[in-house]
Length: 329
Image (cartoon, rainbow, N blue to C red; front, side, top):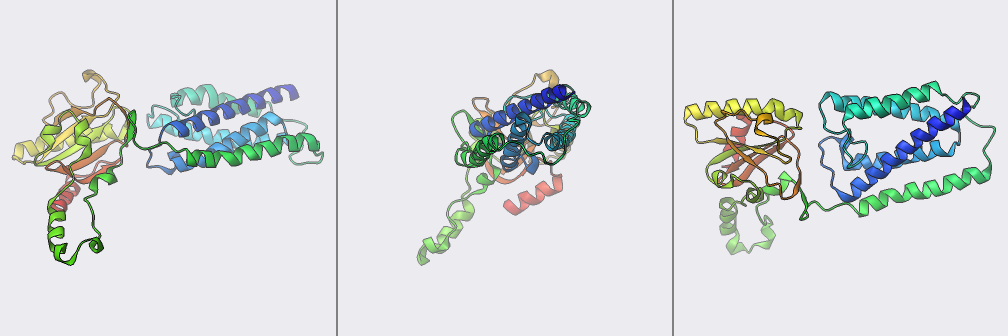
């Protein structure tokens, strides 16, 4: 039984160390985009040292019963988090960095079996807290390098955070589209103040993302509601029918507002598309020449090719959209 417990705890420790290393690689090589704190870059900074530390603890067999209890608690949390991702239809559990694994596979092949093994092969005959104390050589030989390693991880990740934009990928930041040039009155002479204010109100920045959308010319005039969607986005499945109906209603009323559905890579076949084949809305695609980190659904309202308002991860009602158009026009 003691040998089986050692083997199980070693396997669990190895899994945790591998998962931590893969997450470190992810944070060093790609940006993290999320509206939820629990999937954010900041949360990974907390999670990685804790997960890696637990993995090393399980492998060194110090205070075995305490380590076992912490591991059991951790895997209960892992199971709940992975189950939640599986239920919402997430494409990956996000447990192994850039290695995408279906949440149900992680749950049924890794998390649940390891938790069951931990519960069956408990560290019997060991006390939760010492005495007896481990040898000083063993304890400090493990503790000192481990604390140095864990203490160095966060600064390394912070000072090597990937850029938001490169030739290979781009993080979509809607807040950047609303910038309109200098607003500091102190930088404008007294004689030019009135003229500068008028110019600032009239001149709008063209939406930078237009050059990556294949139907850009149709969006450069009048009012457009652009809906970025992905087949892997659960909220998109609910939002697309609502906006499609909205487009049909506006087409029947002769309204000049147009709705455009823009698919985010990776694309799916027409047969699997979320867009109805008889839709009256415009349909287009975001350029696949680079990888896009974008929070879908992303709804963007434009006026003559300039952004008036945007919403990430949600689908606003028509009244809210019209209010934004009125305020921005």
